[in-house]
Length: 345
Image 1: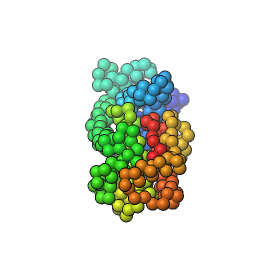
Image 2: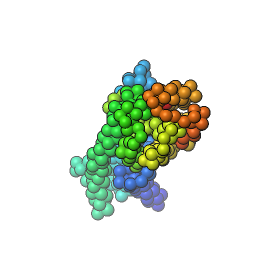
Image 3: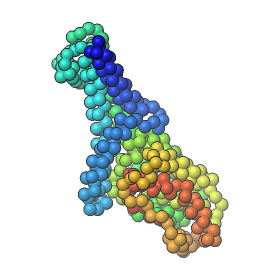
Image 4: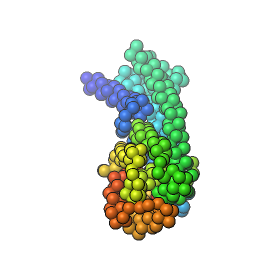
C-alpha cells in the first residue's frame, strides 16, 4: 500500500512539473498579456546574476556593456534547456510511477522520448506508451515555440532601435532634451512637428506592449554602447515636458498625447519589473536629477536660439511636476537595464 501511495504522488508531482513548464511557455510566447511565469523568472535571474558578476570586473562602461549585451540572448537560449530538463524530470517521475523500472531506466526512457532518439521504450502497457509519445510531442512543441517567436522579438527590437538611432541623429550622441529642441528649432519644425510626435507616440505604445508581453526585450541592448531605449524615452519625455512648461507657444495636441503615452508606457513597463517593490534593488547608477542651475542653463540655450520662453520660476515648478510623472520609472529602468548615463536636461 505505501508503494502505491508513493507512485501516485510521483505521478502527480511529475504531471505538475510538466504542466507548469508548458504553462510557462504559453505565458511567455502565446498569451498576449503581461503575465510573469515563475520558472522563466528564475532562469533569467540566475543568468543575470552570473552576468552581473562578470560585468562588475569591467573598468569602463563599454566593457560592462559588452558583457551585458550577451545576457538577454544567453537567457533566451537557456530557457528551452531548462524547460526540457524540467519536462524530462517530470516524465521520469511519471514513468517510475508506472513501474517502468528504477529511476535510471526511467530517466533514459524520458530522455529518449523527449529527444525522439528511441533508444529506450516503455514496456508496461498503453498508458506508458502514451506518456512517451506525449513527451516527444511536448519536446518538439517547446523548441518550436521559442524558435518561431525569435523573428517576432527581433522585429520588435529592430523597430525600437530604429527610433533610438533616429533620435541620436536629431539630439546628438550625448542626447539631451535641449539638443532635441534646438534641432527642432533649426529645422523650422518647432511650431508644427505633429508627424514626429505621432511617430514617438506609436513608439511608446509599442514599447508598452512588447516590453511587457515579451519582457526579455527590455534587456536587449542597442548595437552601439552609448544608446539605450531608456535614455531615448527619457529624452523624448523631457523634451515634451520642457516645451509644455517653458516654451511660450500653444500646446501641440499630438505632443500632449505623446507625453501621456510615454508616461503610461514607461510606468507600466517599470511596474511589470516590480518597480514599487524593488526600486532600490537594481544594478547600475540612476540618472542624475536636474537642478535649478541645469534648468537655468537650458533656458539660456533656448533663448539664445531665439525661442520665446515663459517666466522661469513658474516654468521650473511646472517642469518638475511634469517630470515627476516619469522620472522615477525611468531611473528604475535605467538601473535595471544598465543604461548609459542620462543627462539631467
